[in-house]
Amino acid sequence: MTQQARELLEATARTLAPRQEANPLVAAIADGTAGRTVIGALALEQRHIVASDRRSFLHLAARAAPRPHGTSLFTTLAEGEALALERLGALLHGCGLDEVAAGAYEPMAGCQAYPSYVAWLALNGDPADVAIALYANFAAWGAYCATIAGALRTRYGFTDEACGFFDFFALPAPALEDLAVAAAQEGLDGGHVTMPAALRHGRLLQSYEAMFWNTLASRTPEHP
Figure 1 (cartoon, one colour):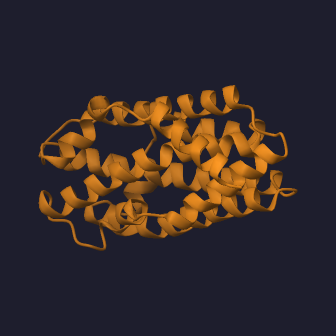
Figure 2 (cartoon, one colour):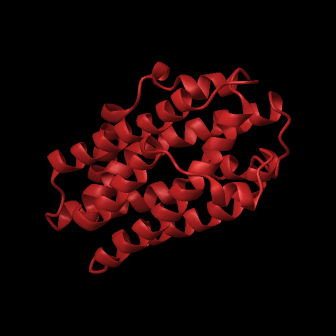
Figure 3 (cartoon, one colour):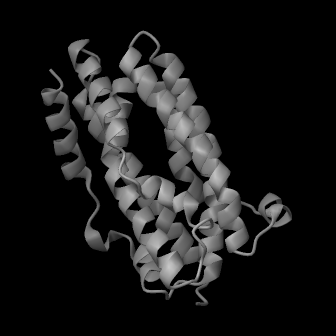
């Protein structure tokens, strides 16, 4: 009975998919014209984002407690953020940054708007609607990470360990997608899904993600 949810999620993802040219920063990293400072800033901003998203997903898991598939989805997402956080140290080191530099870094509002909205969703969004909105972001974020991971190796000489953060998110995650489908179907069956809200959440998530990349591109000088 999950076919309805899978078709809904795939249609939503197509509707909300960013245009190919919508992320010039990833394109600049891909061709090696982005400076190492922008990669360092990306890593430093993710240090805050990943920690925040982990707590948001744990809160969503608790709120979804009467729905086992929703709880499983958000618990798995939180566990994934914890694993990603462990890989950030090697990326920061590859960018020439130590713990002192990381602790002194002041995050940019335009980059932190995304996790702030995820936290808002954790408090206010129905877990099933949030699952649908997040699913639409999986493919775009994973593709960005795959492009960056490849470019860091070929254009910037980063080690495999330093690329581990992006490799983690670039890997296909069929089990996670299945959990999202099950959580969405659970919401549909229980009458919890409100598609206008789910689409609104997804649209805003994509807009805040675009703001993240554009803020990095506009605030960080490029010195290849």
